[in-house]
Image 1 (cartoon, helix red, strand yellow):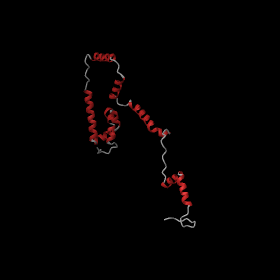
Image 2: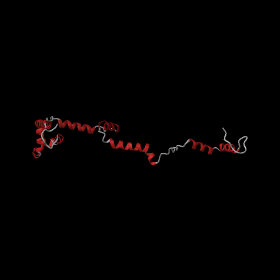
Image 3: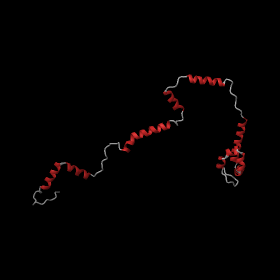
Image 4: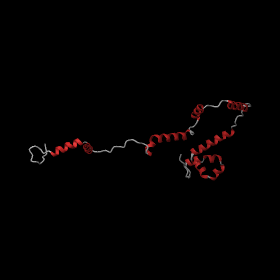
Length: 177
């Protein structure tokens, strides 16, 4: 809500200070800009009035007295719990998982996740991975030259073709079509 008067306080700031205004009358007297804001802002004034009404209801409420046998019943339950057999590991784990907020599991899960990451992908980072080296991409011409270098028979045949002159030739080699 927008304040109609020219005060320096907006509704968000006023709502942050509602507990002080509600519980400490001296604070409200020291901060007159909040009172000025309340005069011009119906929403903040209504919220403060609702809080004051709630506190007035709580001041008038009295807690019920416990029954005369309350202490005796609590003592009996404590003795029964102490005399009961301790839970096994699985029952304790089950109740921990069912009834806990998970705050105790977070460090354990973080450690397990770190261990899995180290075992699966961390080996590559520290050089434990011994996979094949990636082949460099080469052109088909280079691959053909490598094959020719390795194949002695192909080299001999090429030498024979180059050393024989063409038919009807006087020694000069002519390209064949």
